[in-house]
Image (cartoon, rainbow, N blue to C red):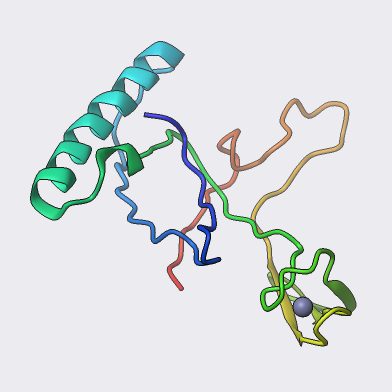
Length: 142
Ligand SMILES: [Zn+2]
């Protein structure tokens, strides 16, 4: 089972995702063993979804470890690249900015939320606080 990422289809709509989370389990460090777990899980979940719900098994993907979600800088209305961002306002967990599309004149608000810390000190040997286990990632639904 390959690591998945959402993609827009031809109509411009995003895939609907279903998340299954396994927490508190002892996951092996060995990369091959991790891949075997993902393949077993994907095969079993895919079989059930395909047989009972008509969802194609090839649409099932998984990942071990923390993930984050990111969007591009394309306009959400017309798709023009590089929405302009300005007038940042900092909040307690991130920032907001005014967003503007020069192509279709759409305007809105960009919302940033703190998702990770990185260390830039030479005596620290970690890059991502979440990946190194120094901070916990919390997941929220829209
Ligand atoms: Zn636009």
